[in-house]
Image: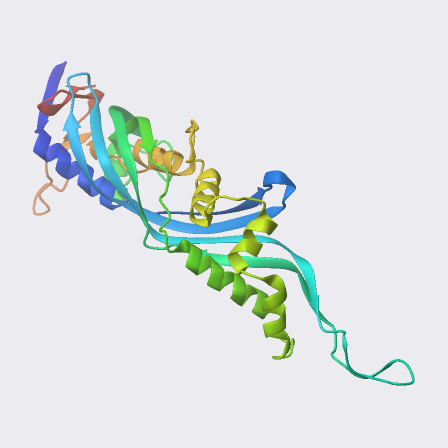
Length: 314
């Protein structure tokens, strides 16, 4: 049995990685609850992200290491919901009746119940600080290939088997998301709007009184949610807990899992058809291509290049 050896330089490997990286477009949505200090908070998110950048290094231990890989959040829409304690204004007498009772009074108006704050952080950039991987070769049979057909028939149907080589992440170190300091102003505006939208029929005269009773909105929010830290830090901590990015880092966070599955199983660095075509068919006299079977394909890395080896023949 003959043997085949193919090598690709570090530069060529970088280009293969860039093609796979740039094809990654991941999305996810989820919802759940979070209750620090007995406070019931529900959350939901809808996100999309892609990767860009990164510096790549091949190592003599058979691994490739990518550092400072940007996670670009094309969509990062996040919502938290909680119960607003009931607050009432009005109900007092303006003109009392000398005979008892009240001739003119201010109607009593109350607000309270569930409030939801939509937070849009789309465009935020976080980082995979370090991704270390080896190469894994897999044999793939097209699931739509009719059973029992020959390799030649499969060739004509475009259903040839393939050897595929994947980047198999061993470690993915995802850094926590940094929330911009301006998030406090955004949340204060969202909190005020959420309250106003929840009670659209409240008369205009009542709102100045309502705001006076409620006091500073950020202080009220901290009181309701049960935390004393800076609001920016609280939102950042909550977001990273939801995405499993808060230290101590878990084994399987959302970004880590999605990126690992993509590289290891969804998009190979390259592939070879099996059997492999070495001479194309000539439609004018012989349309059948000349192909050779590929067996025992393996891929390895050293500091200078990637090396692919295989056996040729049945």
